[in-house]
View 1 (cartoon, rainbow, N blue to C red):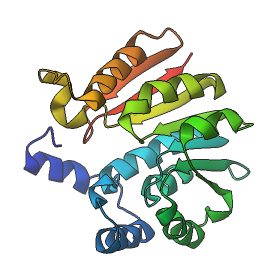
View 2: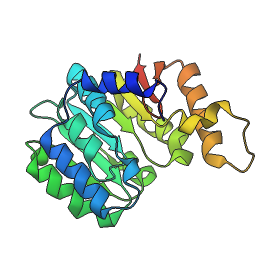
View 3: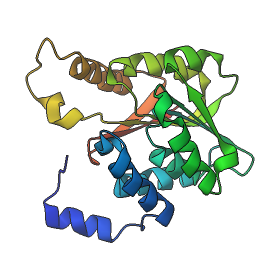
Length: 213
């Protein structure tokens, strides 16, 4: 979803950091072999994630929703040398694809893959995190927030993707549309929960940055 005229959007992309070659390769192979390649973060949003991670300099990162690992690698660009990126996904068929690109990068030894439901995995993670990226199934966004907030260090950042949900957040709500209902609840939660301060950015399909107080 684009909020700027195409020519302005092209200008923004052209005057932002270039996409690394490894991520270009990952994108090409994702489009060749994987269903729903539109789920990739993409080069511009990827550079945004990379920049946020480099500014935060996290010791540990948690990612909910790996897909083919594009955003994982972007976030890993800012992790401390002795830190880790823990990424969770339910799709067993993508594990080897992800690992191939993780190991081609300089961050492969720092990336830990978890296969299964994040609802089940998060409580068993014996770590606290400085940066969390939520880009998984929308009906669980509120649940994910409540699971990770106590594992987020003070001053830590939650980045939430797809919070504008293709513009549906400002359209009349279809009572049968559970995903949009939860995204609306989630956006309200981030705005009103006293433990975080939040700014919603109109980047692609909406990207929220929330900082734990």
